[in-house]
Length: 146
Image 1 (tube, one colour):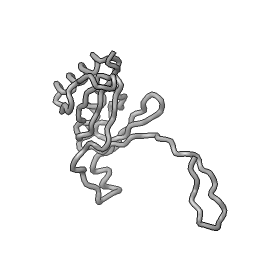
Image 2 (cartoon, rainbow, N blue to C red):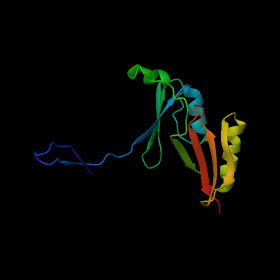
Image 3 (tube, rainbow, N blue to C red):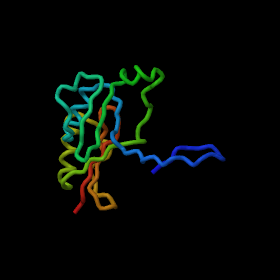
Image 4 (cartoon, one colour):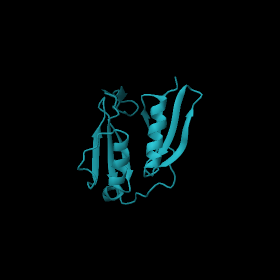
């Protein structure tokens, strides 16, 4: 629960409900290429979204992924520039098994996507790998190593 701010000497703020994470937004250079990548990971992206300036997909549990083209973002934020380097945020996809981590990583790299960290058995007990999406966002693939 959060509260609205108030000035010293005034009535305390009224409690507000806490915000709920509803969506993760990605800014993309090429909508069709980005959506193809995420479809390969099983994200249910609408088939008619490839040429749209904005697309979204709902995930189990209600979280959404949103994609906007760079042009769309510049339409409301004219000063926006493409980030120079990534690594500050990433998405993580749970795979059903260690073998699925390896197979998914292999299939994405074979399809021309950039592998970042080849599959390995992490010290925290998971099979783990990282591939980059078409815009350089780190996408982790993981499963229990057992």
